[in-house]
Length: 574
Image 1 (cartoon, helix red, strand yellow):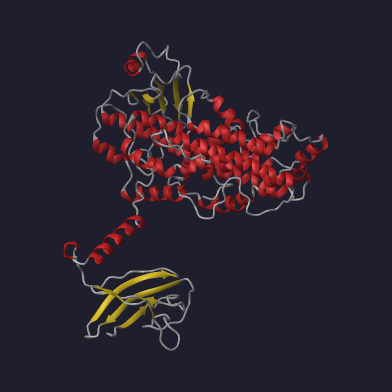
Image 2 (cartoon, rainbow, N blue to C red):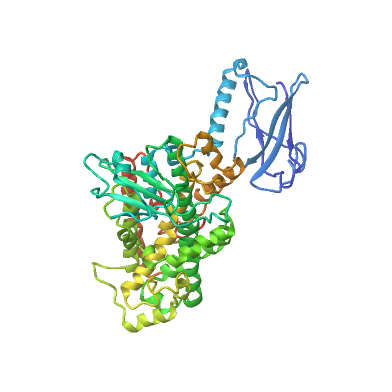
């Protein structure tokens, strides 16, 4: 029987060795050897060794190469240079390079194809890694896709109905008539929507994307498509502030849409994402931690231990960790301050309560508004969970117990968001059970569903820079007919900044390991049968909604997945 000598070389970096058992099988043109354990006297496969070794890690071993000496004395090298985990089988080819047409052994041809299949699965291209991201790259120029993003994209909070145009938006019927349905005029069209964007840039002091509030008029046509029909990039009408129309040159219209989207994304990152989810939740959590012990009567009598301490406990850990690290917006400090301060002064309690928010914006009947449809159903499910109703009968709460809640659950931290405005609507105390339930519903919805909408959608819509960039590095167009495709290229950031923004979007949007799904309680802090039953019912309702959304998404060209209960977290972790 022919004897082959096998030497295995272990890497010399820290923790490269192993005390696990290593077997080898030699495969050749005439068959294969038996599975043979590699072993010599003493300790095998230590760091930097040839053959034997000392274990520094039970799970991983770094193998540099395997050298096989044939009975004829030929030395065959099999490079490896990779970490191998316990139980893993690794197939190595001999080091001599060989082209595909030179492969003449079926076994090696099969191995070559298997390796390429595994590599394609391992090294997936993440530039277009989801149906939504792929669709965005293909359709970012389309007017109907531009409009749909204000309903179901990264920031569905800016759009609102418009019964009459503001006086500083001089759109005439003659301008937009070609884009309206037959027999309709600007005055008679009933389904007209307008977006009014806040000032996100100061033209006199900012050299990056200087843009005042943009005005974008969207029209919902008879095909239920929402399309932009007029864009003005600054507030005050002027000769150097024209109203752009779909009939303008392709690049003029594209630039106008890009600058509107740029301002929208700035609002999204600074206000809807950072301020209205992360910072809001941190304020509530700090207030709860400072004012409520775990044994407080509120948690006992209201059967809501999990809402403040058990359900919220994942959020408490995660929000306080992530908030100091989320200052990723690559814009001047004064700009972020300006945006957040202005937004803070205008924030109301109703803005954070989805049913009221949708109604106040006049969007109750707009079709294909999946953020609204899924969000309202989730709001109701969470509300019933907090309410803990049984057959429609509310749990009773005596007035003195409610006084305990009002006295102990300080709202001072929350109302710092708008303490000076008497019309903000933020509760200073709770005068009824319904008020308390509404507030807790808002907190849970904001930390789970609302954050998922503004966070998890980022890569899908922002990774393709021309569609929605946080940075545009030229001034908005001030005249018509002067742009070309080079103007589009000049406006987008350089390769480095583009990559940074795409990576940030990817890291924030991707699913993190060990995240806690909404309705899950890995740390059990309660044993009351009623509470356990309530949790089961909550989980069942979430499961039913998950099935309904999944079925609906099968019919959509771009599935809306951001409010799938199975993908929602108990709190903010990214």
